Image 1 (tube, rainbow, N blue to C red):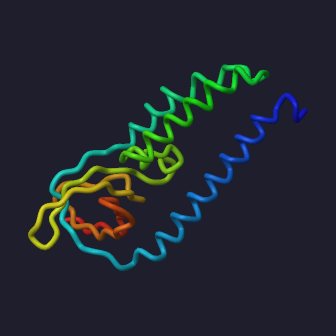
Image 2 (tube, rainbow, N blue to C red; image 1 turned 180 degrees about the horizontal axis):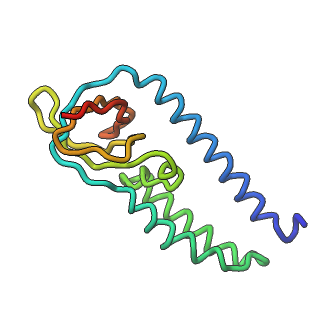
Length: 152
């Protein structure tokens, strides 16, 4: 059984670990993000659809491929290395299909203390509108967690 399904079992375990790590990170983030900055949303665009493109473009073609020989595994490994390099060096790292299960990703222009700024927001709220007052917590370079929405 391990001979036939070894790679599938390994990838399944890796997926479980990544999912558990993401859930743990978001729980810790939610509890530590009570502090934050109050800002006003000026413009916003939802980025959730990008993860569907990611899944369709890169993952689905490999679902129907056999991994019986080493020659079948090498193209997948090369693709995963290329995807890793692209995602780590760009903001696409935030386009995580696991996040889409409970959180939304927004690209937002906001106003903080009279200055306009831009950033990506991870939010447990599905709908954020222009002119909403939100509380954001900085978790990375131009990356924020939305903690609270105060509707205008």
